[in-house]
Length: 378
Ligand SMILES: *Cc1c(COP(=O)(O)O)cnc(C)c1O
Image 1 (cartoon, rainbow, N blue to C red):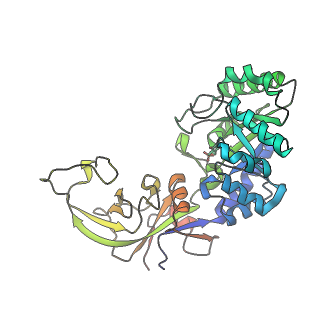
Image 2 (cartoon, helix red, strand yellow):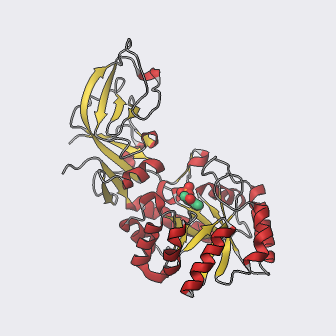
Image 3 (cartoon, rainbow, N blue to C red):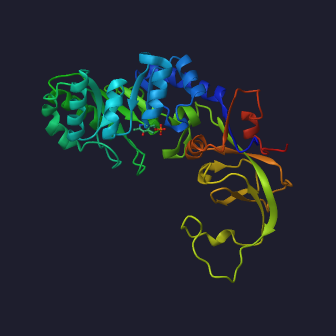
């Protein structure tokens, strides 16, 4: 089998982010939870996290959490940050996984399953806080708060807020203060019980950067921060973390100067979209053996100059190289920096080889990224 496409993962960069974030969270008096959904809780990465003394993991897919449970046993605290499906409740209870919940009915179901297993089930109550994704409506949660005490097999661990996921609503100090008050109020409804407040993802980090400690916020969940060292919700790199841990390498399989036929009737592209006419002129184009099946082309970045990603189909990435000074040829292998969506897709694609490297090993090298040229010929 060929070596490409390949996703190269620099463990040293990620490890350094993990250590920095652990130290920072200690200073901020907050418990960090490492979100593993971006890499399917792949073994080399979770092992590195565990060796760095991370014990709090969260994922939106149950299979990933089960993998972590098998690896580290009960020493790991595991949160399912996607609302559970009914058919998952038994497994969740059996393996001591803490799900996010957003319906009274779900709490009742969980209570029933937990009673059957004679095993108290911990849950986090997700609360809607502005992004209009998952979560109880706050008023409803306060209303049912007292009734939750009627469910003897359900233990409320805390409340969880997630922002900037669907609609890009950013957290701000007002939201944070509201969440802290909300936690206190809900705790009272629950009979004076102490519950925690969990916020996520990476978008929340800026609030600690700006304000120092947040008394009353207990936990932060992040993935992007330690994997990419960035905060896409604000389109910024976090300057005290490292970037460039992920590189996608792909091979050029065609180079021609081509243009789109101007006089024929045009319909939609293979995915039902309408192509932008800005890329239709006579241009030198390279085709790479890498497609939507393997990556999200909107989250691939080519660090060199004069190269532009035109688009992708299922199995090709088309790159405009008209303005590049480098003479790209069939057989050349080029590297792209990959963002969250591209990395997730690469992990999900059986066609992409995953290769872990440390600095100095393999071809990936952070410094090379910061330079201008970034393409390796075989
Ligand atoms: C994905 C996710 C996170 C982590 O978000 P990042 O942007 O990767 O930091 C946190 N909480 C929930 C509920 C999520 O789905």
